[in-house]
Length: 198
Image (cartoon, rainbow, N blue to C red; front, side, top):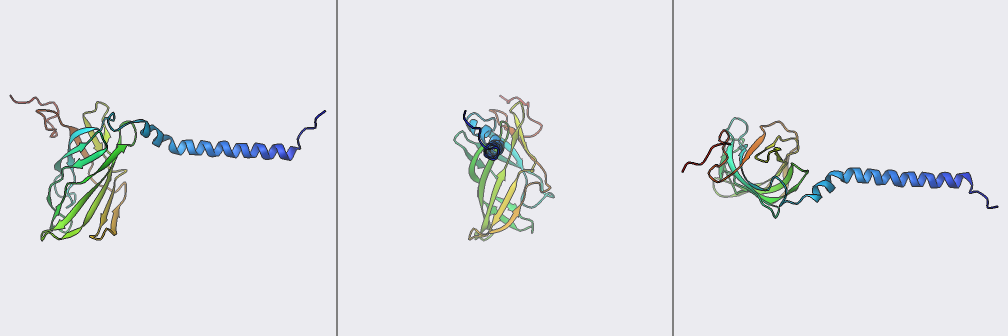
């Protein structure tokens, strides 16, 4: 008659199996959002397209938002049409390139983009750059989006690329909103259902 394994060996095997299953469960839970997002392609995501966003100026909340035509392309590139000259927080004029970067699905309705804007002062000297990590969430009907700032990170670098300031997610500020552009309807707020003028 075969002898049964010692109780300590069974307990150790059971414990190791439990640890392995627990580790696998943790790994699956932490990658659940990434797996769901990876299953989506940029070409099929509702963020793909051309939007008219109302973006926040660099001078702060006292200045009005500005229209920023934005392209979230099917190949994962993003182009944000920012105003080329703005007042900064010190009320000095600064110039910026259009932010360019990449985007990917974050979940079924939300995208995550990373875009970089080069900045120069009024003499044309490079003063640094701004990296924007945004998370616009598209409405259920696919015609608008909002980025409430809860996941937004702004990273400011000096001319050599050294990080000098990071504005973290959740920093109070106005949400960025956008309307998907259509032929004859540029997407300005209040004109969502406007018909083209012949």
